[in-house]
Length: 223
Ligand SMILES: [Zn+2]
Image (tube, rainbow, N blue to C red):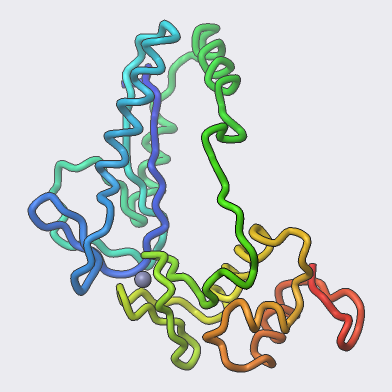
């Protein structure tokens, strides 16, 4: 089918997952939102949008798992899933599927771009102060603040997700910068924000490796 819109729900899941009775779990047994349900929802919203703007073009919808450390057990054969080991072949397959891009396609692309919402008008940010917020590292998988440090790994005590301390700290720095754009990223600030990393030197090493240091000694901060 060459005349179609390809819709991809991209997931960066890492670790072992399984399907059971149409539900999606992370091992050992944490249910997470089924990406296929997300895909169905997005597909139907896109389909309604296309109808509304007067296009009748089929949608080819897939979930793509891009992380090479991802495994899915008990995956039924007929689901629209693309696994890390299949991405290259899928792209090659797409390439062989040639067709002419017509004025109609260009007009649709332009229309979709023009409808792209940069800033969600429905977002309502609650007011917050640094002191009110619970400190710690949020799990990359379940968002729980129950992450502990064990050696070089951060381990979530709620869902069991593993991540290197470095990548967990860097995620927390991003959070910190987003929540407090006027605050400087310093070793002390991130040490306090992450809480569970008990060594300031470790925080310092991660920051110096990944950010540019500005100033010296107690006035140093990272950009
Ligand atoms: Zn977790």
